Amino acid sequence: MASIANSTILVTGANRGIGRALVEEALDRGAARVYAGTRRPTDFADARVVPVTLDVTDPTQIADVVEQVGELDLLVNNAGIAIYDDLGDPAVIQQHLAVNLFGPYAVTMAFLPALVRSGGAVVTNLSVNALAPLPIIPAYSISKAAAFSFTQSLRALTAGRGVTVHAVLTGPVDTDMTAGLDIPKASAASVARAVLDGVDKGEEDIFPDPLSAAVGAGWHDGPVMTLQRRYAQLAPAQEAGR
Image (cartoon, rainbow, N blue to C red; front, side):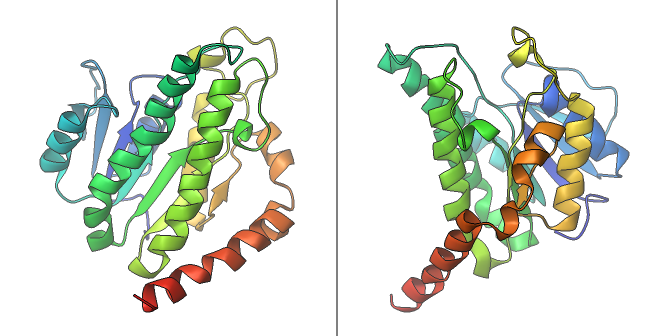
């Protein structure tokens, strides 16, 4: 996408933390309309914000929001959960996968036709735990690693359709989700600015805070991205062979 200004945006998980900061940052950059997806009604002062009820695990709600939004320039998959666990209960892993993997998958695929029409973008808020699991939240780490793989796969498969796909690999951010961790944290507002800066610059993988930026140093020319680009070349060849 060319610019945040004058665009139509949907942010999931927009009621607090990074999601709400992304809504506010998009407004500051001149977005024409921001659909704020939340599980429960949430008020926003700016008239350009349209609250929509959206549980990313509910297919009916997703379909309703697709119909309500219509055309879309930027989808931000931000809704997520993080529950402390020890891998002892498979239901906790399933819960994380339902929200953090299958939620973004369902919302993205539902809006993909609109994004193809607009030449738009998909942004998925992941975590550095997609790269290195945090043992106190292993189910979360598993789901974010899976969602990162989905994002990379989507990027390769939509490259020829005019849709850009961005992965946001955040470190610790000062939100309700990290309230129990006594560690240095970036502000949600600073992360939101860095995310939309990355979209404007066309960065495929965005490292929006000091900790993640250290991880991201040399990432774009590193062995993982080199292998990813090599694999991505197979997608057009496969499509041509069908």
